[in-house]
Length: 270
Image (cartoon, rainbow, N blue to C red; front, side):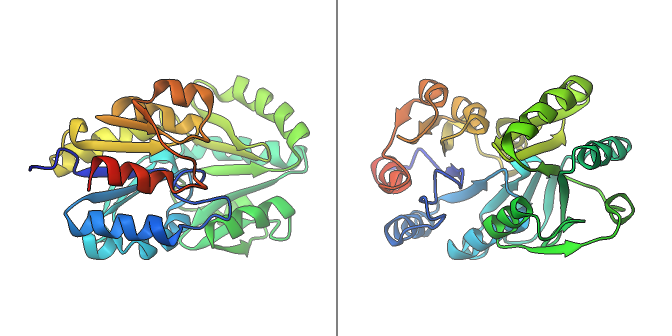
């Protein structure tokens, strides 16, 4: 029988990984079997590229020719060749304003370069949370603006949730026409190029590799997964997904604590 689905797109946090941020043995084995049979895996996450890398290694994406779609779709990398297939970066002119907002409110601002989280405040509790989540190192710089002399896929302002919510509103009003401003966690304020979206980037990837969206399964749990779930031939929400995400899905699987991703692969791919 010909396999209808050839591409499996997976969100990481709350989807592929359990609450300990780990892939279970069962889920890993199921995904290895799918790749043995020719399935291509795309890891689609809001994390920076290096934060996705440990999971790509665990699933042997280099060997099987998988892809990383990081920064919520800001970058697409062919993990086998290392080729950057797509990149959408922040307008450098906006960086001084972002920096000033963080300073005025005594919050830490971070960005990413290679395996480092670049920051003036490496010991800030929320900066450390981000570094640990992504298995990245912090790199202290004396002046954030001077240090950032490279193209930036995203910045993040981190801090106490109640005050950060106030800053989010203020910054959104100023920046809404120029870029994306939203919280991915109560204490993480994401600052990204306009129009960053997992579905939009997946459309670019499909065109480049010659697959159709009908051949794609996308699985996720968060608001930022809704677009790709609607876009995919088979859009799947986790049992632990947000309600609006479930409503957008064609199918609802088990939770991320119950190997929900493996259940989908077994039912629709193996």
